[in-house]
Amino acid sequence: MKRAVAIVGSGPSGCYLAQALLKAAPELAVDMFDALPVPYGLVRYGVAADHQGTKAVTRQFARLFERQGARFAGNVTVGRDVTLEALRAAYDAVVIAAGLSGDRRLGIEGEALDGVIGAGRLTRALYEHPDADPLPPPLGPRVIIMGNGNVAIDILRLLAKTPEELAGSDLGPAPSKWLAESGIAEIDIVGRSPAAQARFDAVMVKELAKLGGVTIRVEGAGESDDADARKKIEALESIDGHGSGPRCITFRFGLVPVALEGRGGRVEQARFRNARGETVTLPCSAFITAIGFQAEGSLPRDALIGAAADPEGGSLAPGLYAAGWFRRGPRGTIPENRADAQELATRILADIQEASPRPAQEREALFRRLAGHVCYEGWKRIDAAETSELPQDRCRIKIPTRSAMLALAHQTRESGQ
Amino acid sequence: MKITVLYGTETGNAEMLAEDIASELQSEHTVECCNLCDFPPDAFKSDHLYLIVCSTYGDGELPASAQPFAEALETTAPDLSGIHFAVFGLGDSEYEETFNFGGKRMAELLAARGATQVGERAKHDASGSDMPEDIALPWAEEVIALAAEKMQETA
Ligand SMILES: Cc1cc2nc3c(=O)[nH]c(=O)nc-3n(C[C@H](O)[C@H](O)[C@H](O)COP(=O)(O)OP(=O)(O)OC[C@H]3O[C@@H](n4cnc5c(N)ncnc54)[C@H](O)[C@@H]3O)c2cc1C
Ligand SMILES: Cc1cc2nc3c(=O)[nH]c(=O)nc-3n(C[C@H](O)[C@H](O)[C@H](O)COP(=O)(O)O)c2cc1C
Image (cartoon, rainbow over all chains, first blue to last red; front, side, top):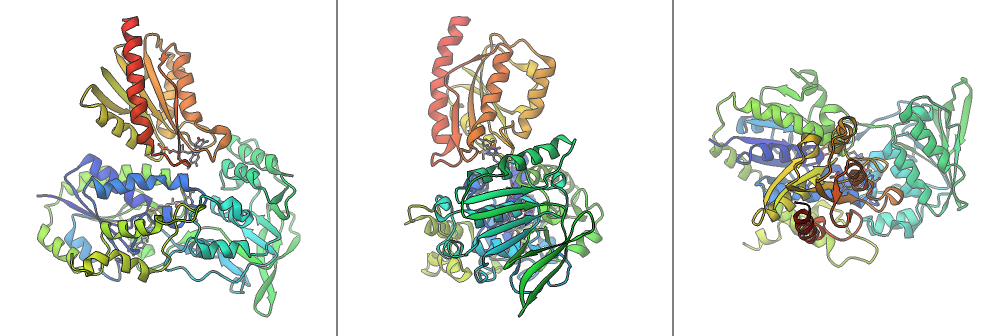
């Protein structure tokens, strides 16, 4: 009898897992559930709007549904619309690849002030995630970005770009207008550690040398004997002094945030401690935290991982697995998820031979019962609407609300076809 | 013709393209498709044409699946004279200074061991509007025709 795997989440880890499973076992049934009406997770809503080349992996993922027989069930939140237990009863294996979407907090005084914004919250709003909070009021003249990962650099680049430099992206009209009217004059990007320990990739830093409207300064990039660290330091040195544009970008390192302070409920300055133990204060009209992500939502990650038989290997319980950011934590790029998924696929394929297969009938009944779900064809209708009649300088205009997405997705179904 | 499509990939695009090329050529040729990380450098055969599909990663580096092959090629230094290959590179012109360096590096590595490159090195641009397979299939036809001539000469 045909075995079946349910994958919760259709981001890169879920998709690469489906790919690896179906490559090794083409007859396997693979159903992918996503809380959103649209697939591909952070490839759509995290990878920067001006990094379209990176999003080309979705062409591979589309094949899963178009040629390899995987099914997409969007608009289904596991843990709310269907329980994990119900899925586990119906499928031979269930894999949680639900990512981590909550912003990790600094845990310092003043974090609740207006003008303090998490990177996840900001990127979701900029990339028009249907569940995003609205875009905040304009950031004002002086922005601090706290964090030294690739996400921090993405945000820096987007805030620093001129409207013309966003040509070819999929940034929507409202976020584009918001960026154009941000009023930003200065951006400080601040790392808690020395530059040698920064998480960002050297290429991400070098890319900043293409920006036309900025002046870049790097304070205290330091030194290192480590080859990897040296690459980063050299990249920073290569952009130090770049440009003479109106927006001033300053890289600062080794500043541990101590408190955010403001009046009238709005952030006005950030207090740090440097390596010598001295206090350093930087004024700001907005403070963006880009220091990582944590679990948020309808699946009890801590409990699941805590009770796991072999969390490192991706096994949570018999027939239950975790993949991608949900398993590993918020680290690692798209290729790491691919390597991981390939390993996990081997393990799952070996494991499911051990138990007797679950009957297909109950599974199909459950699948049909998830009324209002968006199938792959529904997503294709959304995709078509998003990529037709485009302005010249955009490659896609996302549908920003869930209701509009659902209306498109269910169009032919409701007209009785 | 006997054709082996070898791919070096980081996020899978080159793999998908290699499989597309292989299945397209299947009807007229004897075709194998293999990840470079599973291909030992002493396995090259002079009666095969090797189509190398390789992306670029990091700062103009070879993608992960091509790296063990490149290392083995350098440490074992096999004599590849009489071996014919063509290269299809994948890259992104957003990375101006290192655009398609992965394919370039593969071509250099093989040529340094005496292998003969056939045709032009093709370069796909992820920021361009062409789909890789739309460029790769005509490219494959072209290099196969060229290789047929060359391999006859040398045989
Ligand atoms: C802002 C940002 C930019 C990034 N840029 C890059 C980049 O340029 N290059 C790169 O290589 N990596 C980048 N990354 C990292 C990359 O996005 C991650 O490595 C990758 O997306 C992790 O994949 P995942 O499948 O584990 O999670 P995700 O991509 O987050 O996918 C999880 C999916 O699960 C769904 N889901 C969540 N909860 C449920 C539920 N209860 N029921 C059903 N579905 C659910 C979500 O809707 C989502 O679609 C970036 C990350 C961020 C945050
Ligand atoms: C982090 C990163 C670094 C890259 N570096 C380069 C580069 O230096 N030069 C280039 O031409 N392309 C570069 N690319 C583009 C890739 O080569 C391109 O996206 C390709 O389609 C990936 O194919 P793959 O999935 O087979 O690895 C880079 C892509 C990413 C995401």
